[in-house]
Length: 426
Image (cartoon, rainbow, N blue to C red; front, top):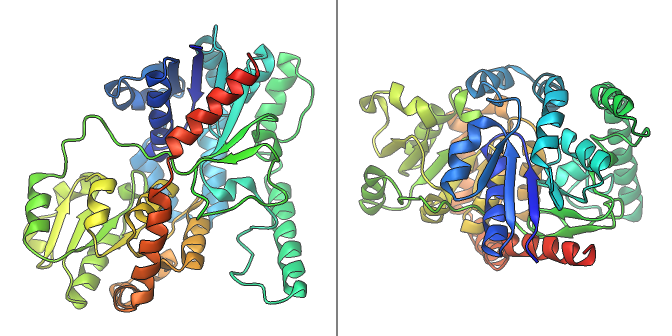
């Protein structure tokens, strides 16, 4: 039952890695799996033996410029507005035509939440579509919203939480009602009937939605699409991974487990004082630290770093996190998933997008703590890290959750669901 499957995604590396992992597994099962995304990801996709199809915009975004811009915005909604109104919708028509070419003779489309053009292609061509969700906040659930409290002690409080969540999303829809205007315009040009908002309920396939995260992060809610399947995190591990850098490996062997600081692939372009304050906080607590600084590592003389600090451009999260005493990061869902699997307590400093919600879920799990970005100082980080490192409940709970996440196989579950869907619609 070999099928031609096109996986359409957009965003940062954290949005592309899960699709590479799934595409590789589909290829191993005998299917033709093609990833359609921006040209900037061609090398990493093809190096993993996966077929690539370029989808405009060719270079995605200037990540350095975008990261710096995000630092200037004070609210997550402003950042989301920037991402949709300036980075996605202006390219919608070009993306649509590119995907129409990529989807020729395709048996199935698997789409990212912001791959709006892919939804149009599926509807215009009649190609079956499976949609995906990478983080729980994208479900926009009133039962499981950012406004909800960790514990509702009475039925009255549960009702208040539900009302608050419903009000939050009604307000969001009103404030963002113009975001999807380009989609409505193209739908009319293509002769498609008016539909639900593609950025809200319209993002979901009516037949199958794959929630590509662990059940420890979120469980199905009454207002989730009934056709949702939670797969677990589809962790990506490169076939070309050469292990940890020699300098870092030697550092890890020379002393006790360090605190690891990382900002992922986007926020790392505008870190502010994150790494500098973090290194001081670790030193105050008597801990060594590892700074995953991206290209910024080349502009900082090593003699300026505090003693017991190792700064590198990049290291595999799956390799370094399990050797950490604690992990400090931005709360991206990919990084959060890797930290959960490593079974280590974490301190999250969310910046934008889904990160504040992911951080809140980690706190509710009892495996981490959170600091708002504007309050990130060495003293504050040291205070929160002290609680994580010296209160044994965090390490115990993190280890427990780590075992649960390690027992999941998100890639296999996702591919099993895709093949079951194809068999059903043979």
